[in-house]
Image (cartoon, rainbow, N blue to C red; front, side, top):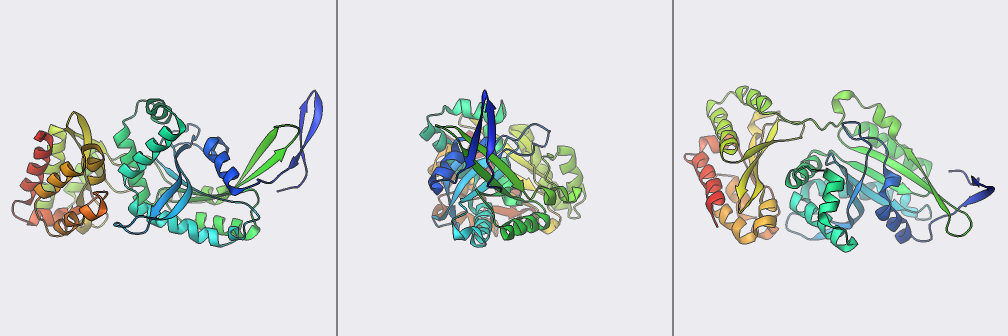
Amino acid sequence: MTDQPVFVLSGELQALEPAGFATEAEFQELLARHPRVLDFGSLADGRPLRLTLVAREMGVPTSADGGAVYALDHLFVDADGVPTLVEVKRATDTRIRREVVGQMLDYAANAARYWPAALLRRSFEDTCAKDGRPLEEAYRDLLGEGPVDEFWATVEERLAAGQMRLLFVADRFPLELRAIVEFLNRQLRQTDVYAVELTQYRGDGDLRVLVPRVHGEVATAAKSPSSARTSRRTTREEMDAAIRARRDPDVRRTATALLDHAASRGRLEPGTARYPSMRMYYPVSGRTLPVATVSLYGDPAKDDISFAFGSLAHHLGRERAARFAADLPPVPGLKERLAALPAKGYNAWPHATLSTVAAEPGALDGILAAIQGLIDGP
């Protein structure tokens, strides 16, 4: 950053001098109100990037059954469902040199584990309420006519896969932090890391000019095409092809039966993870809700079905979620995860491997019966 002024020519030439932010709170409030100063790059389809605030001081837990231990300065999302984590520091803060890097990585690692879709949605809607912004307007600006439940499920999936942006924002960056950011951005395959230097200039009266400079974009451009984040969606044909590649005929039958059940009684939504996955939506209490996801990984032994209890508890209440948990069969592995749900406030995705479901007598029929009970229940 240079200490030279910038000039505004409007009739007369006016010099605007560099001016720091008086407090970190002022800096943070500016970003919350004007996220466009962080809009660089584009969405997967080429549209301009437009970040939308989910929450300020977003709580970050470090365990499934604990409360927030840390607070991220800002969490934003874009229309592709990519979360953007932002930490703000002024140049006068000595933590800007190295401590802030460990802090951000701590936040990202725990957010990927402990931010379910229901929490993210609730945080966004709470922010809209505090700002006096109608939800319909907020969602229309963010998604157009896109489905809300699917969007937040996508955000959760991206977090779990490490598909996110980490932004360090400051009025001035030391060279060593810029070097760390560029190194991380080269090494991390799914996560983009940037340092955004936001210089403020002030003139007469209330005139202010903000000039952002982004560090780390060269490293992003150098990432291999195979590692670049995309918004591709799994098709049913791709899922069926992956299922046919499984050696165990019982696993193939189980996966197909789960997908066919959702296709006939609800709907299937494509997953956006790097591995083939599809979400199972069903009509429950007058709305269509995500109930489970079937995922097929590189290692077939890890193929699983996971249940969207965070979303169910958010929309239907914990009592209804608890009844659904009780109706699911006591499959090894799943049984223990279901037992831990009350302590987690039902904000979790308990899962069972498809091989375990296939091997356990009556497990597949039990899962389908529990889902049907959820559809039919009060």
